[in-house]
Length: 298
Image (cartoon, rainbow, N blue to C red; front, side):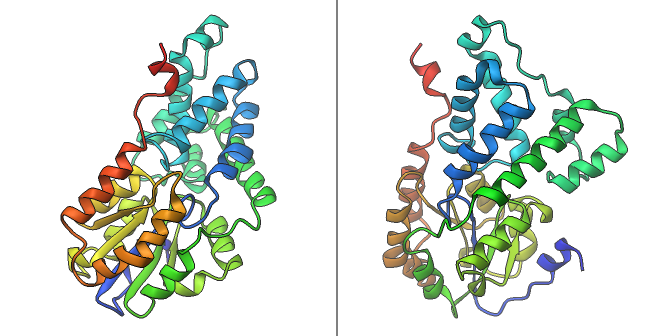
């Protein structure tokens, strides 16, 4: 059975469905993964040593502190290159970041999942591309660093309590752009896999596709909730007419406590949609700017 078939063949056991993002949402892993795994490999494989300080700032802004937070690793990488190209300090050093034409073509392509396997398949159909070879080495280097470094990083407070609260009332799955191997390891390591029916990673498509295949048309729209920490999570929910509960970057524990003590009951009682959801989303959007701080300081 393919990954996609596993999503399609999920049948409701309960009247409610909850999709939960993993990195930075259920687990406090976003900063360690990006600061210790993604960024060092980005500097190493893409030759950004002459502008390492600015590369780190751009990567942290894109992946942690902006409206791009949580985006798939490939468009995130290209966005980092673009921010570097526009930055005056980088221009002053005479440094030219990668144009990433081949990567952009891969991102825009149809029929190739934006995963390591998808890249390998795309490379098989576009052989001999040095940039794609670098991209594969980079993404494999990132995954190796994650497997080596990221251990023992548990869920945020009130995550376990919230899953226990929903258990028996809602069908839950993990909805993530992280590779499946890392997700399965982390959810099992901390005893949370028992609460979800399926763990969906980047190999199963986008978060929008996860929700569409697993939930849309199987549950009433007001009975489908996505819990996430990034704008992409919210867009995936809204594309499927589902509700969205944001985990606020920098205030994750407080957001989970409010979910456990207040929002979960509202969702199960049919009182979440409308003004309550809108207030939560307004708080969330205010935390994630579009412009980086170095542009605001000009």
